[in-house]
Image (cartoon, rainbow, N blue to C red):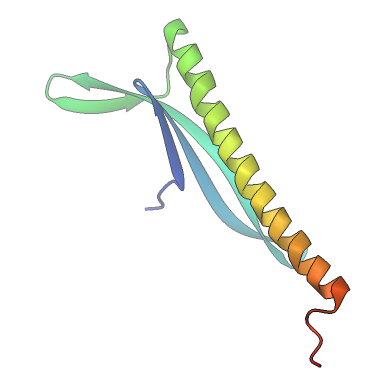
Length: 97
């Protein structure tokens, strides 16, 4: 079973970030998705639900905001790495002397 690449917890709320690879127009791309769940204990067993109460809404907002920020940082770092590689190509750093 696949595992999420990140889990953000806020109280009983969990936001899970998933990454799936897919080929689009001959290129391998990553597609991200988020699932939400709330955990609770019933007797001695832990259970989860996809149903939330009004008091869970701020927790959901926090969790998904943290996931979003994480994705933005990851994508920004990736783009900066690409830009750095492109700059080196333009400067001729890859040319043997």
